[in-house]
Length: 143
Image (cartoon, rainbow, N blue to C red; front, side, top):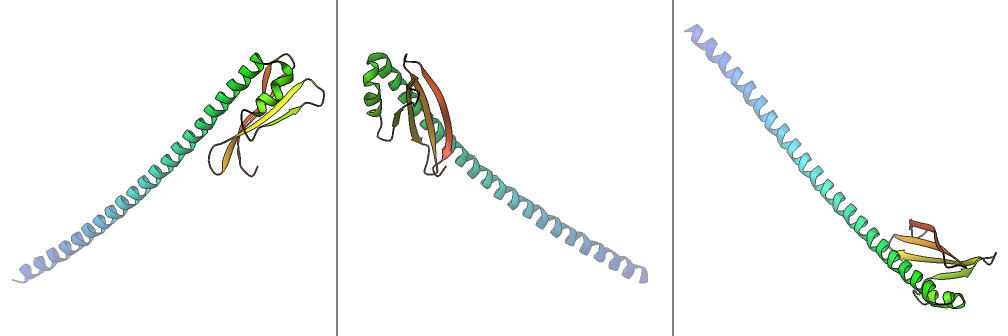
């Protein structure tokens, strides 16, 4: 009979440790699952913001390309004396200046990407009608 009590005591201790290890493993796996879910949600939100920012940039880039096409058609269709006024009429925020060395027009235009950034485009139009892009970059609005 003494043997029976010893074996019963040993098996109940083994079952208790096994139960504790099982509970610990379940808690550990649950914690990792929750962390994985939170990380996946964070990555999804970051990807969505990145997609929106990229889409906004390319929308502004498209506007700039269309504007540049309008400027090119003005340069091709009008005499040089009318370039400055005609180009200034293409957008309200445009800056048109004669260069100091009188070799052409320096034209600057900004296109809004979002509330915090814009696409700045600066071109030089030489006297012979050649358009050279001097600057085409994304900047913060405060830059």
